[in-house]
Length: 488
Image (tube, rainbow, N blue to C red):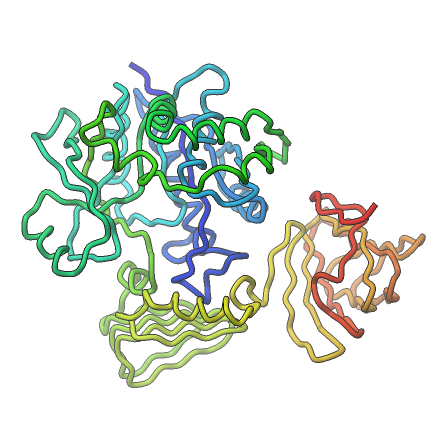
């Protein structure tokens, strides 16, 4: 019997414990933390690799938000042979509504595929073992049961929820789930390991789309009906090789926020909805803190993990990530050192979960480092704010081939553009001119203008802003390829 599978990648969250590398504008799932591709790309590739003689994998469903859609599209474009539909949430409502959107999309054509649901921010070191286990989970879910992947624990981890299994092993290696347990104290976690029969909750589920919709309707009919109302008014846009689906924003905002676990899974034991656990032993990690990134990294003889331009002497069991400059460490042990263009984090490795305390302070102080890096990605390319003072700001800007910035103006600043690579098509008022390398142009305050890259290579310019106010909110958009217009 052929099993039709649809991968569902839950691509929300901000990964604040991995600050300063992970930020709201460029969160953890889009970072390369282990291996050569981002965690999001790894999740998509793992799910798309499940096909075999009796498993057929359909197009991937990615549930993400409007703000991150172009990050997701850019990274999907780098994966060959992957077809995806992006379900775009206007606001975050946790994972239960997100999975419901995916189930409604998957059943829209009258089909009832098996959904392989995985977060976008995990890593797996043993790919073949992961694929083998997930294929067994697909077969176990084909009869209508819910199957959750449990991670075989090797330490008394207090940062994960636990699953208690019962009964004998089934035909596909699955056990009945007797109970879900919240994140335990260290003493309780040690008891779980000593007793056996407990696994970590990975947040990965395999189930039919109809099974999820029925279970949600049974346990949380308010979430089910509210999500269906938002879905009933959805719109569809085509973007290159991907489809963008948007539920109604107003209706979606009224959906109760709840996780998959709290809404459904924890109610399933002893209910009419059978839930099973299949153990996964594949070098899994959710990379929830810098400690976990160090654990899966390539450690040298002294236990150090170095990413980027760094030199280490007489140091042990230390994790260093250098993004922009040389970082050196001498005589330090068990530290985390993270360098970015605008922030540096130094912490004891064992305290890396507490990075959230710094994030809380950033929120209270309304610091820009909470949300954005100095280098900010945009759908047309990126900009890097390399210097600024009270009345000037200098940016390095890269525009993708064929990409166009919005037709815009500023109330408080003028701009000078110097082309350093490629050719720019510049609209300034009623004039459209080509500006080549080593040439420059001037945009007066209050003048409508636009920048476009008509070439086949990346365009790079240096922009010098001058004026009384240089904030990013001093942009009035008149036309925009990416739907961001702010003026008529």
